[in-house]
Image (cartoon, rainbow, N blue to C red; front, side, top):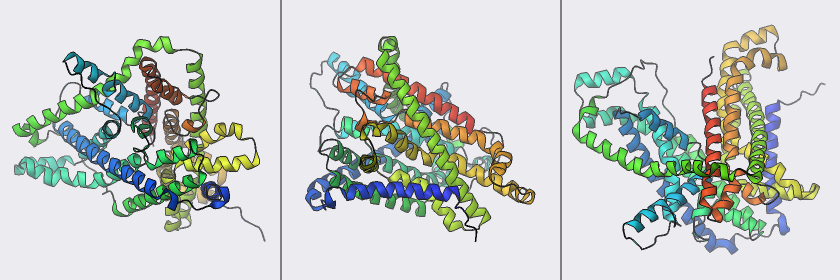
Amino acid sequence: MVLKLPHPGSLVALAILGLVAGGFIALASFDGGTPRLLSIGPYLWRVLAFSITQAVLSTVLSLLLGIGLALALARRRFPGRDVVLAVLGTTMVLPTIVAVFAVFAVYGRSGWLAEALTLLGWTEGFSIFGYPGILIAHVFLNGPFVARITLDGLNQVPAEHWRLATALGFTPFQIFRHLDWPVLRGELPGIAGLIFLMCFKSFAIVLALGGGPSRSTLEVAIFEALKIDLDFGRVAWLALIQLAICLSMAGLLHWAFTRPPVGHTIRNLIHRPDAKNRSLKVLDIIVLVVSALFIGPLAFSVLTGFRTMLAVIDADLLRAFVTSLAIATAAAILACVLAFALASAARRQRLVLRSPRIATFYDLLPDALLAVPPFALTAGLFLLIQRFGDPSNAGLILLPLINGLAAVPFAYRYVAPHLLTTEERYGRVAASLGLTGWSKLTIMDWPALKRPLAAGFVLAMALSFGDFGIIALFGGTELVTLPYLLYERLGAYRLDEASSIGLVIVLFAVLLAHASGRLSHAGD
């Protein structure tokens, strides 16, 4: 009897599950596995209440800004509109630690707003810490994201529908009801759920702008329990609670949200008939001006780093840049390898073995990684490393590993559809020719996969390069990345240096994101 080796994707899935389970078991069994849930009860309820409240408020405000901006941009054509769209796309890859700097630069104690109010005679100070700073940063990052995605959806309305609406003389309300609202209804549940999850798990923004222990999300509470109190039992309980909430939310969205199929139609430039309505014209101008006053200064504050760029270039900056680049490259390689293996297994189950339910498991596994608290997983793996080796170098292992796992869902989105397409088109021919394994990969898959895989690799690099998460645990004199260096400068109120470092992070992240976008439009 010949034993058949499992598919590499199955081994990868088992390895990921084993890694996550091993990390949590190491946490839960630390210190004899003493249950600590009851002892953290009041604190837990306070953290939960704040996490949910700020996430709900951030989601609602982001949706209001994003939808209003998307509708205004869909109705209006003006000089500089393409620049506005480019800025909206840029905020999608803006690292959260850079958003923290922008909020400090504009609304902080020595920010632009405080200086302007002082010139006008307003001497009363105000604090940016707590809800104001957190909501401003979250809306700044997520509002443009909502606008960009929603605008893309509105542009998918078939040209024939607009011609029919014009011929029938639809009023602005009828246009919104019959053409805009179906698009919004299809897009918003998924976007709202994603933003809620990101804000619920928010770390860098809440850590820097929360203002104290009373303003902590679960992610920050896990970090504090780990970094300050070394209470691994509390970390385990908080992580399990966050994991349960995020998985429930992700499962609910997967069950409730089904995006309607996109129909083939003519894509000519559409002149919407409601653009001539005077009331809507006034409303759109107000929305555009308010959005510009909110997003413009925050985005522009990052560019002020050009003034002191040359002054901050030193050995520390170069060392941090090289460290960030090395970690991002390792994380991107890991993310692409894992995504390719999982996508191959999903394709095999769906199209070769005809097991769609098992294929769904491989599809859901990357998304489930988004729900895993990275600090808890890091702490658990750190405890495991401690048992078998020198923990002093754990940061160099765990940083690319955790960042790579976090980027798997995004790399998977690039790889999986193309693998399915090649199997549907050429799978039978490849089987008839006896192509398997390496020959099937190089002859059948690689021509269609190389550009999407490169796009996923570059995007994973961009996400890891600007990440300020796990480095908060391991960062110090021996291990410094650019986001950590920026956080240090912000903590010391050296805003000029922080602006230049933030600009370097943004420029490199935008360059990578732009390259990813160009590569993703691959010729088939």
